[in-house]
Image 1: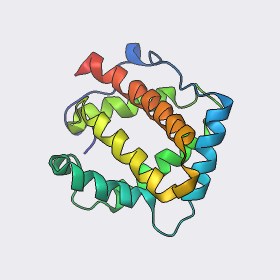
Image 2 (image 1 turned 45 degrees about the vertical axis):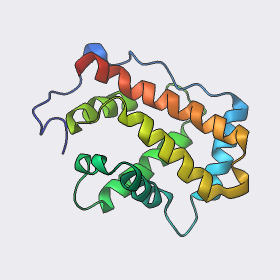
Image 3 (image 1 turned 30 degrees about the vertical axis):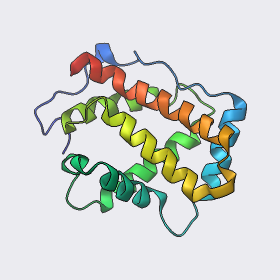
Image 4 (image 1 turned 120 degrees about the horizontal axis):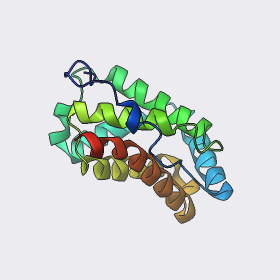
Length: 160
């Protein structure tokens, strides 16, 4: 259910562009991309495993998602794909993430939910990447996720 369907207006223009760019070092970009390249082609979709694990660890989050998770799983994967593709363009994802964060306020997502998602996402990626997901790679993903969450939360704090 979109933010507009919940009666929320589009994110105000004054809020756009207020988030900081996602900035990873060149070494972190390489680590994230290499680990993602190892995971993306696997037969089992990491995004399906992520949602299964999220709902298992935090069952109260189930109400935030549609009954049929197929589209949610697909959109999540496409979002991560786009984010990874734009890692060397730190400002490219900024406004899209701010808009996404604003919409998440309308879905009922609370600030502390971002911590649950980050933990489950990184654990899922680590499990699927195996030995390729060392401490440096985990730190790079944690840095990326923190920046993404911050970009999404900035407009949410303004409006919710």
